[in-house]
Image (cartoon, rainbow, N blue to C red):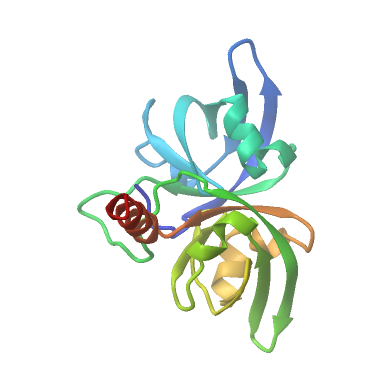
Length: 198
């Protein structure tokens, strides 16, 4: 479980196919604190298990399915990725509850400065549009954000300067894919209502 409050932007060192899985290597700083093999770390919002640590580099095994269903297929050495260690029950919850299970890929339609803030417009998959709620929560590449407007599968968010500095959004541009995780409560409500209608 995560909060969507990104701790740092790590840097991809390598992402290569191995015999049993893809091996993702990420140079990190803050995410190394207290890290142990088997720990969960959200990488661009996707929950991964630490499979190795070599100096300042975290290593993860990534399944082909995970690579296919996320924006990991676009990762190359030097790419910035958002990192967040899993939630500690004695810590703060500053964002919203995020599981690290990606629901789908969105596409950035517009990302531009507007005054002191930044404006982001994203197109979600059509079959996920019903999860978008005005003023609801969403995780984009693992970043907890508030939906500012909804038009079918297209939604807007406003970004403060800190978000642009601390996360990888400062390096993103229109046309790029982002990992989306919709609010967990909405998905449970949908499931319960569907069961009641049977």
